[in-house]
Amino acid sequence: MVLCVPVPVHAFDCGKVAFGTPLSELDGGNFILYMEKDGVSYYNYTGPCRTALHEYTNPAIAFAAVDGRIYARIVQTFDGII
Image (cartoon, rainbow, N blue to C red; front, side, top):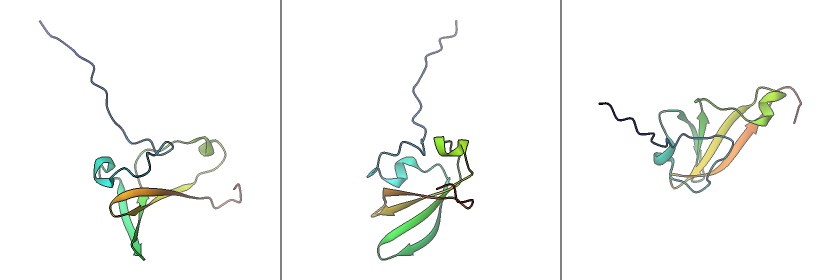
């Protein structure tokens, strides 16, 4: 007999970020540090991500962390959509 039990998975949702969450709880190797300045660490997010904005453009999404906790999502487009 085989027993299968569903287990909820806590995947990172780039569109619904729980700001203040420690980066160590979210990072599966998808956050790439690209700059540190004035106590803020900036990370490119390279994992799977889909937001409503993706219907209109292809944004670059980055995050800012202070003391190892995520505090900002930074979205940049290159086609003048926003």
